[in-house]
Length: 480
Ligand SMILES: [Zn+2]
Image 1 (tube, protein in one colour):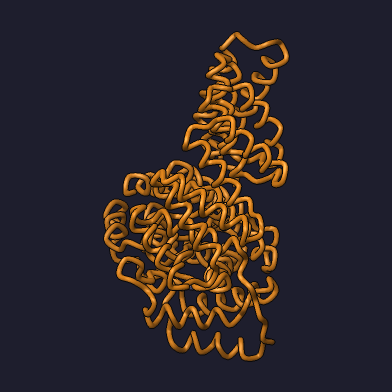
Image 2 (cartoon, helix red, strand yellow):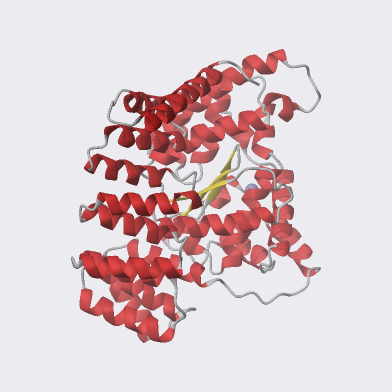
C-alpha cells in the first residue's frame, strides 16, 4: 500500500508543480480556487489518482460489488447540485468505516462502510456527504489556501487527507516523505465545510428518494461507536469530525422533511452478503450464515442464502451449494447475481458445456450484465476457445467503452490466436483506459511494428499511435 501511495504523492507533486507555473501566469480573479485549481487541473489530478487505483491491490475488483456502488453513486450524483461534475467511484478493501473524496470527483468507499451501514439510506448518507465535499470543491479550496507552502507539501497534504482515512501512522510516514510535518490540521475540513456537505448530502438523499432520517441516525451511531467491532472502527470521524451540535443540526432539518418509508434494493443486501462471505475464512462464513438462517437473524432471508452459497463455492462444496441455489430459485425473484453464481459453480466443477449454457441463457435475460460478460469471456479463455471470447467481447464492448478489462480479455484472446498486432493494440487500449499513456504508446508502437495485420488494421494502429503521441506531447506543455 505504502509504495503505491508514495507514487501518488510523486504523481500529484508533478501535477501541482506544473499547475504552479501556469497559476502565476494567470491574473488574480479573486476566486482563489478557480485560479489555483481549475476543473481541468482537478481532472488531471483525478487521472493520476485513477492510474494508481487501476494498479492498486487494495482496490476491490469484484465487478458485482463495484457496479452496485457505481449505480448507487450515479443515482445520488444525478440528484445533486453539480450534474456536470465527473465522478469516479471505487471500493477499497478496508474493514474500517470510511469513505473519502479526492479532487476531480474521485470517491473511494471502504468495504467496512458498506458492511457497517444498516440500510442503503445510511450508506447513501455518507456518499451524499462526500459528494457534497466534491461539488462544493472544499478540498480544492483548501489546497488553494496553502499558498505559502511549497507545492510538494500541498500534494502531500492532499494525499495525507486520503490516507488519514484509515491509518494515521501511514499518513505521518507520507508527511515525512514530503517534509510537510505539522501542517496536517490545515487540511481538515472546517465546521462550515462539514455543515455544507451535510446540507448537500441531505438534499441529495431527499431528491434521490432515500430515507433522510438515516443521516442523523447513522451519524449518531458512528459518534457513539456502538454497533461496530474492533476491526471496523468508524475512521470517518477522523476526517469529518462529528460533533453533537452537527448531528442535532441535521436532525433538526430532517424534522421538517416528510417521513418516507424506503425499502433497500435487493442488491444492497446481496452485495453485502457477498462481502461477508469473502471477508473471513470460508468455514467461519459458512457457519455464520447457517446460524443466522437457523435463528432467523437477518433483514433479507434470500441474501443470507446467497451469502452462504458464495461461501460454499469458496470451499468447493458443490452439492450443498446446489441446494442453496435451488432454495433461491424457489423462494426469491430471479437475479443476475444468482445466475452468475450458478454458472461459476459449473466452471468450478469443470463442466464447461453446462457453464457455457448457463452463461448464454443468463446473458439472454441480462444482456448488459458486466459480471456475466466477464465470466463468460474468462470461461472461453480458460477452455481455450479464444475466437468465442473475441466474438462475445466485440458484441458487448460498446456497452462499456471505457472499461479497460474488456481490452485485457481481448489481448489475452488474440495472444492465444498468435495475432500480434491485434494483441498489442488491445493492450494499448487497456492502458489508455487505465490512464497510462506512456504504456499505451509503447504497446501501440509494438502493434504498428507487428507486420501481421492487413492494410486496414495497420492504418488504424498508425493513426491511433500518432494520436496517442500527440496527447502525450500536449500533456507536457502547460495547458492551464
Ligand atoms: Zn465531511
